[in-house]
Amino acid sequence: MATNPTTSGPRQDNITASATSESMRQTAAGMGSDMKKEAANQAEQAQQKASESIHNFAEAISKAGAELSAKDEGPAAQLLSQAAGGLEQLSSALNQKKFEEVVGDVRRFGREHPGTFLAGSVLLGIALGRFAQGGIAAGTSAHQPGDQPSSATRPQGGSYGY
Image (cartoon, rainbow, N blue to C red; front, top):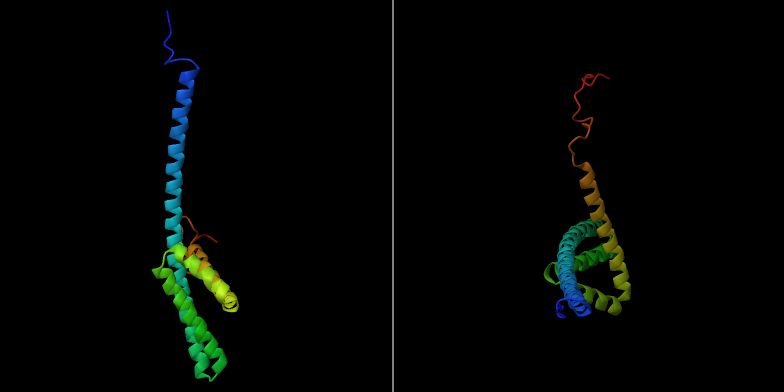
C-alpha cells in the first residue's frame, strides 16, 4: 500500500506547524489589541480622576489666596492666585483633551518654561498625594462585613460580657 505524501510526513508537519504558528500570531495580536484598549480606558479614567482632584486642589489654593488677599498679603496672595489659575487650566485640559495630547502639551510646556514646570510639578505632586490619601482613607473607613463594631456603634453597659 502506498501512502499519500500530502497527508503524512515532514511536509504535513510543516503545514501543521505553519497553521499553528499563524493561529498563535492572530491570538497574540488580538490579545495585544485588547490590552491596548484596556490600558487606554484605564488611562482615561485616571486622567478624569486626576482632573477632578486638580480642580478641587485649585479651588483650595484659590480660597487660601483670597484669605491672604483679605489680610493684605499681596505677593503671596498673587502667587497662590496664579497657581490656582494654572491648575484650573490643567484640570480643564485634562477633561477636554486626549491623553496623548496632554502628554505632548506637558512636554512642550516643560521645555519652554522649566521653572514654572518645576513649581507646577510640586503643586501637582501635592494634589495627587492628597487625592491618593483621600482614596486610602475612604477605603479604610468603609465598614466591611465581619468587622467589629466601632466604639460609636457598640452597645454600652457590658453587653458583650466584658
